[in-house]
Image 1 (cartoon, rainbow, N blue to C red):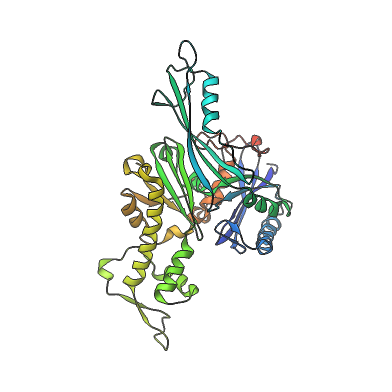
Image 2: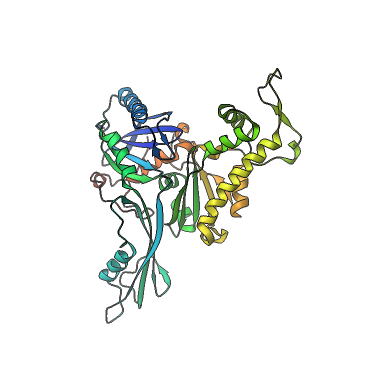
Length: 402
């Protein structure tokens, strides 16, 4: 098969820069190479040192291109800016025809009302996600040609600062790789760890990274709410460093080796040695002290999300439960804390595509989801506004991996 268009999904994360390159034809998408390098110059979705980040990204792209002898033609990036804002808006119209049949004009007017809020020039829309239609208060999948008096539709709209996106696209443009699409990290991750049934039933996906935690709530297959919390694994590491009076590097090691979100009652009296050699300067640390720090921080994080969602997160509204993903979701006992806070089932998500083991880990969900998501722009599960993606029309086939 001849080589198709070479595209790259790119995640500019606080912990890692991840790139997945793929060859795209009208028939299929073939993964060619992936790269994960330690990040620098970006924190919580914000570029804090442009030149440093540019150097890291440049080296990662060179590695991908030189290893496979390819040239990336375009990029799709994830966005996880913690200061993005969202609002839910409902458009409604009185059905105007004499026979009370919903027309295309009625539908268009309701949609326009739900999306009519204009933003000031420094902001741009990240997401316009359509929710179900209602006729006279009853939910319908497609209102066209149905009878009633009033038609309503809601949209979950998310917007962010134009400059935050511009600086990222400028960085990649400067490397000869135009950015064709920016995808919310939460939607990208959810794409990989849930299926259509989950999203129809109602599910909350929480992606816990190093610097931020992204979440998205689905009900009736629609994005009902989404958000970014500026708290992630590095805050937990800082808590451990402060609580145990150790350096951050030592705290990260302790978290990895001994961390657990829930203290086993049978291990309450256990301790571990700070350095492990029992020499001068070493000291014993109670395991329960470490686990209490971790549980408190994770419980606080889940409570923030629960409070932002309000009654939308009641157990009966998310029967598919809570799905955790992201690099910091691998903490032992974290699902127990999630289940306690949300009063429903909580589990670690598995990437749903038939992938090699190297791609199945939770920390790869976002970058793979970006690739999958943008190749299926017409999928009803993701009714996202797209205006700048001239390439999208080329890719109509379902994403496949080989």
